[in-house]
Image 1 (spheres, rainbow, N blue to C red):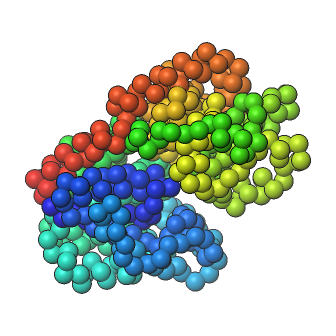
Image 2 (cartoon, rainbow, N blue to C red):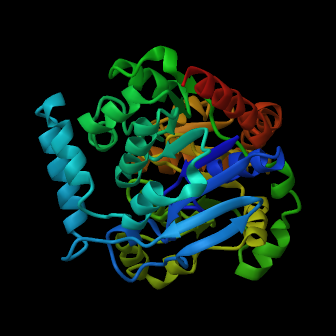
Image 3 (cartoon, rainbow, N blue to C red):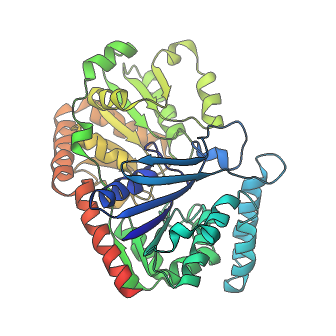
Length: 422
């Protein structure tokens, strides 16, 4: 088979990218041809703001997969143009289904990947493609040309949308993933792969045909996570005593701001814990860190992106993992923490309640509730027997059902199903 993957960011630091990397490289090892069309963005913010990290455009090979990166083109003006445009699209989407054609046109204004669209129309090596797999419905500017191309050629289209459901009972987040033109894309897709049953049920409730939706989840590779040296990490970072770890993008919606505020409460109450953050920093979070007083700053290690060895060491060193996000469709970092036997604190939002079992392998708190978050962190740092039992429950569950091999088996069957249906 020749599989065409459309992935807006393609590197291991991105959860959505990791999903496609794991699937694509396994397909390549089976002898299939896998072509990835991506952008030159490394940081998500590169799509709307200059000065962010990017990667060289052009062709490269990774694990037997051919990757083509196309330059991002933005509309003229300041970075705020993008969020203003998306908010306008959300408001227009309230007009209902007739607004879908207008929303498709607006989605193509900024950012754009003109090279990707041109390549789809003119590349002879795509003549034998059997299936198109797209992702990340909120970055629809890359999906739209691929979906049109697949429909014109009668090719099956599989989409893994990574819909972020946000907080229960609130549409503040999910509305950016379920505008009329986005729902239309998912309704027309041959198959839709969701991360959790929560995501599946929500989309079915919005009119995506239930018989086309499959829940596949995400996973980790236990071999890649093995070998972490917690003592080495603590020595390198000067960490003594309890350590709370967070990873991924440091941003408000990821709950990182609330973790910092919860830790400040704990420090004020005499806690000796150190907080470590690994991952890219959004501008608003950097300002908070810069404003910390000297005593608090000594309790914080903000490391930005780290290499794989440092990441493994940090996971091995942590007593607790905290990521109370409202914008996770699954949360691979929870699995990474469990693989190290570490309990987690998460938000009761997005797809996370289907992943973290409250009171079994972690604790769930309302998104943005700093008092509840501080209480959960305090509880697990104080009750080491409870923390150990939760971490061990998570470790057993990961080994049993949450590996990339298990996920690949489900996705691989879905490919055959979609091609047969197409």
